[in-house]
Amino acid sequence: MSVNNELETIMLGILQAIFLIINMALTLYWYVIIASAIFSWLYAFNVINSNNQFVNQMGLFLYNATEPALRPIRRYLPNLGGLDISPIVLLLIIVFIQAIIRNPIAPFFYSLVA
Image 1: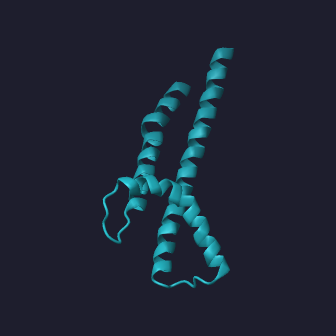
Image 2: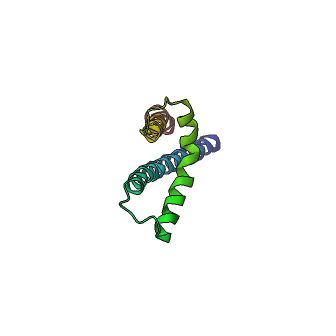
Image 3: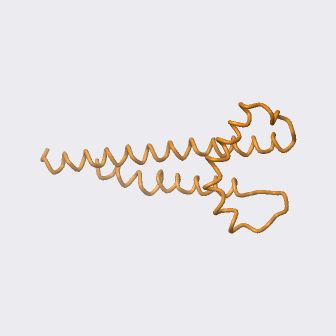
């Protein structure tokens, strides 16, 4: 095996690791978006105690984690009254990005290693 071939194999391994980490981060963010949506429903219907400090901290974390990604989406969506579908749109965008990482990119890297 030549030095150039070994270097290519190492670089492909690094790229695969980067795409794996990106995929894992997107999956984690997926769960944060779902938790934020569920929390907002529970908060809106007074199911959880809004005076509890832990509940407030959790709500603040979820809001700060999701709002920067949801705000630009809300800007382009039509006003549907009290219905906010921006989390659904963001989840679809995440699925689209994960599909691009898994389908067209991953087999390309595996074919280069083989």
